[in-house]
Length: 114
Image (cartoon, helix red, strand yellow):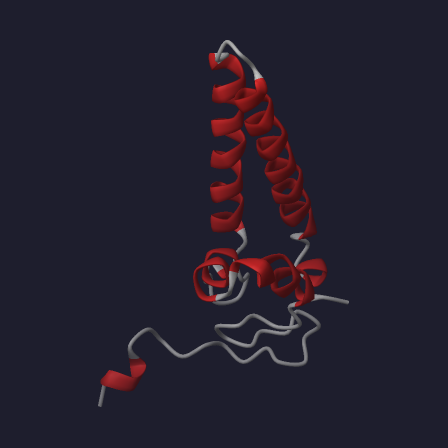
């Protein structure tokens, strides 16, 4: 079972997939129409906004890291979906929601404190 399933966040990835598909379809419709329809453009922009918010909303329940945004910003574009889908642990704190790795993360900036 993947990290997203164990943390009950698969629905967010599903929402992102639908929003991306809808945005793509509406973008193509907007380009194909002879008269530019602002409603289609607005719906496409709204779907893109849902995508960005969705990536931002995927968080680790233990350390609070925005895992979705981290994967988007540090992974090649063609690997984002598979990386998110196949995560086994949080890439920041290595949290395993099954309970085998439940040590709390270090305090912020603890490496700089003496």
